[in-house]
Image (tube, rainbow, N blue to C red; front, side):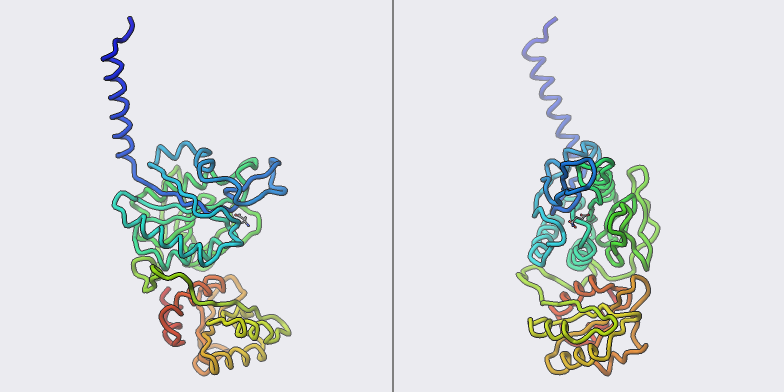
Length: 354
Ligand code: GLU
């Protein structure tokens, strides 16, 4: 028996209605794509000669059709770059877009795809500049999308699973990779190739993703997101901060270059507990005393604090110590600090609170 015209129309309407109910039932998650290996492509099944930031957001999402079980996913391409080229302009664009989208009631959370090289810097920047408690998750991969056992699709699935979970509210910006949930407050890339490259080497990871669900084990006690005093909305640039490294025989060469280039702040990736050669220390003390340049002592060592009151007399020199914030994240915090103050005591307070 052939269905008549009326039956066909009724079936079509029912399908349309069911589709709408389905879409409304699912939380809305935006995926903002910036490039990286997760969007990388190679002519081979391994990683040789691959290009980061080659695949667009539509192709990335098409590789994980299961996302539609979790959320109504909407993709936006912000940039498509290797994250070694990440810069202030993209950060400001990202912060503005994330804040704008999270202001909308229907947005449950945001996932940002990103290269792993500088993910710790972007995650920390957003951790201090996003003005919402809703989940913001950064995700990347160590293997390009064309590689055997590409880790990107699973990582994206897990990231969206975390973004839609009410358990993820108020935890600050997080990174989800290799089934781990990591906090932006202590994030470090620790291996050049391993899929488990990210760690929170001082505080420990926040949790794991298991069977498509986040299981949290700790929460950050540091100020972030809605508790942050920093606000970059409306800014079109950030104060210039450079990093200089200390090592045996290090001279003031790069301190002098940073000063000449107009840096408003300098972070030292010092030896041990944030120490540096006497020549570098003298040059930095002069830069602070004579030109008001803010100086933060951090360390090349991955674990442990760069503590005040040890071999360097920070108060006498006008320096601040970074505590658990590594040189790369220290640079981010000092840039934001300099949008509000140049007083080293205030900067020291920030390095203890964030
Ligand atoms: N250098 C590239 C980037 O950071 C690839 C590394 C990666 O994403 O794993 O975007």
